Image (cartoon, rainbow, N blue to C red; front, side, top):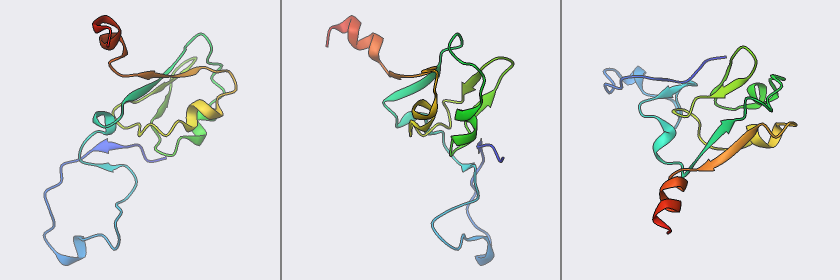
Length: 107
């Protein structure tokens, strides 16, 4: 599976370099996805059974295998939530960004 990675985009030199549609090959990103989401997904290492269901279903390939659990690459995760829905062990949790800040400010 091709993993997402940041690449430098320098424009096109020849007409053949332009894509045929509104897409690029898998994993072509010039910025990380992390900035537009209002929440992140995290894996509870104690609940994760390393069954790799989330790894298989992730459309972006942002779930990475570790020794006894998986982790989610937040830089490239688009936040679709498929991993959380597919997990039979409730090991993937969604946490709202800035939640701690809002709680401290009592907003």
